[in-house]
Amino acid sequence: MNRKEFDLSGVSMWHELGYTGKGIRIANLEGTDPSLWFFNGKIKDPFGNVSGVGRNYHGHQTADILHQVAPEADIYILSSAGSYSKNKAEGKFIEQSIPFMESEGIHLVNASLGGTNNRILNERIKQAQSHGVTFVTSAGNEAEEGAGGYARSGVWIAVGAVHLSGKGEILHAEYSSIDEEVDFVQFSDLYVHDARPGYEDRTFPVQGTSFSSPMLCGMLALVQQLFLERTGRTLYQDELYEFMENYSVDLWELGHDTKSGYGLFILPNPENINVWKYVGKE
Image (tube, rainbow, N blue to C red; front, side):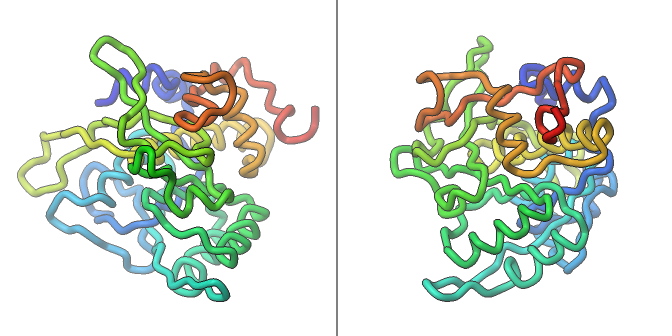
């Protein structure tokens, strides 16, 4: 399942070399059903966010992509709920989820949703980044209308979408938001498991930046495992960003552009990575 995309992005090679997200903790900002068979017990639900039981559901699908890319990472389902205004940010995301990320050592956050660009929330996210949490979000499916709130904030890594054609061409997804705020692109049009009872053998494709975002986030879990094992620590968000810039393939204009950001991030051969370049010990 998704073999061609995983081969092209380097995920298959990294899996074969033993990089599967082991020891890495990812937060996904929506509920799912942790008991679904295809999660292999890797979904953690500390605050009772079980959702979509017995049916196909967005949260199952984004967590499924995370788990396919990083099968040994622990995935925590946390709430993105909040109420915001110019001088206010409150609700479960800022009051419960972010403190949990810090106290439990969450390495990566995926938000496959539009979200909000709120000054107070953004400052709180920067605090969490200083604790080693990296925030990844979908750029949005609004094409020329631009990126969503989280993606516009400048504190999240905003991920656009590309599709792999039957001929093996990398195509810009027509729905993917076009904006200066797009940082990178990753594959969407990926296959997920049918979550309904009696359909255990069925898979089907899903499209949207909702799925390119967890694809990229899962790839970063493999990178974090490598750095943890080789250097004794994971990378901070700015360090991961530099790493992705160095290993992304330009798709349209040279350098950063509004369709693909810095391009399609591809995992390099681990043997060719100078890890100390990124942890400040070169």
